[in-house]
Length: 263
Image (cartoon, rainbow, N blue to C red):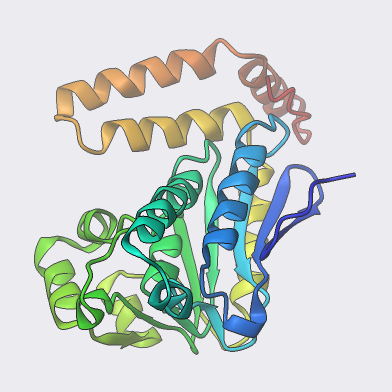
């Protein structure tokens, strides 16, 4: 029997596609210490599972993807408790960011603060027309702490990230797509179906190839070009001499769908 996680759940859809559902709907998925621990544990489970090919991060709440940290819990916390929460929170965000397979966020409604940072920790963000994004942390006396200052700047550039973080303003779906905060914009209600469809396309490709492509992208991102090309070459070698490559070439020549070994 799979483990139970407070505030999140895992749903498996076909070959290698797993949905990580934020499931604290009564609080619009505000991330408590317990929920953060669940995210960290669930992502650790997924990272250790070689059968996982792609993950969709979605929400069971009607009006929100995730509204960020649970400020009611934070309001009662002592400095010592806040420091302990911080360790768990960092593990949750790094758990999503460090998954070795592609992660697609399905965003609807509010994705604010830590909620937006969860989406930023994914590789592709699919949002519907109800989405409202923002990093409002400086308006309550803190700064983004789930990777927001680093991931947003890498996604949209320093100046745009500075504008959004310094003003703490909220951005609607249309502007989010124009600024590059999200990658795909779909009609209201379609974020999850569109994300699952995209994930299915990814899952149909070589598991070895997709994992190594993500590794090359991530490791090469902050390197100089020469180093990045060496990273790419190492990942290419790890893929080219795999059973997946042999199966892919054979399937192409046989005009059939590949049966990926995924090893």
